[in-house]
Amino acid sequence: MEAIVAGRGEFKEGLYAGIGIAIGYFPAALTYGLLAKSAELSFVETMSLSIFVFAGAAQYIALNLIALGTGIFEIVLTTFILNIRHFLMSAALNEKAENESIWKKSAYAFGVTDETFSVAAMREGSINSFYMAGLVIISYSSWVISSGLGYIAGNALPQVVQESMGIALYAMFIGLLVPSLKQSMKAVLLAGTAALLNCVFIYSGTLSTGWAIIISTLLAAVAIEAADQMRRKGRSL
Image 1 (tube, rainbow, N blue to C red):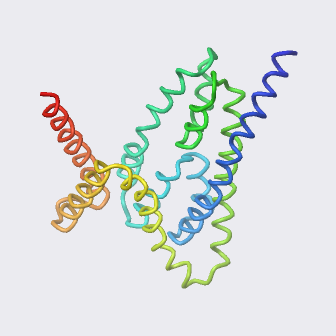
Image 2 (cartoon, rainbow, N blue to C red):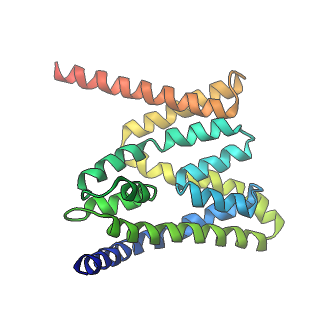
């Protein structure tokens, strides 16, 4: 009985901790739904992305690639590369996690996003499945429901507005990128190098749009990281 009462308390604490995330997800997910409608995805396709992927940046870039007619394999590979950081976040949270069965950890690992990771990582003490369930459920519900509301709202917009929503997708990418650019010159170099390589690959006809994004991102990441390591070694000599 004491364990059940304690579990309920942990669950409620997770819910309360996730309220801010749920509020923050509302406009982002609403915009995703609007953009998915403008990209001519069906309601089922739009909701499936939110239900099974639950990753804002990945869903946005997937929309862009779908609109460009990119193949499924390139879309999956691109979003996988984009979300590699989730391995690191899950590994970090595992250090704070209580000793529970693997299926419980696997269940709440699905709900690890940048925001839920930040909240869980800053919590004093350990985390457990009850706390993470509350945190993930309120965040996940907000994202999924808001995605659907955005799609439905898109149906009510005039056709000319729906068609112009494609521009908002690029504005969203800029909004995601600018904060990182303000904080790190390395991010500026990475974004600039990737963009330059992407343009070279596409306009030279070397690669398709999907592969150009993947290859340019990987090459830029490797090149910038190698240059940064060389710079650090030079300073230590």
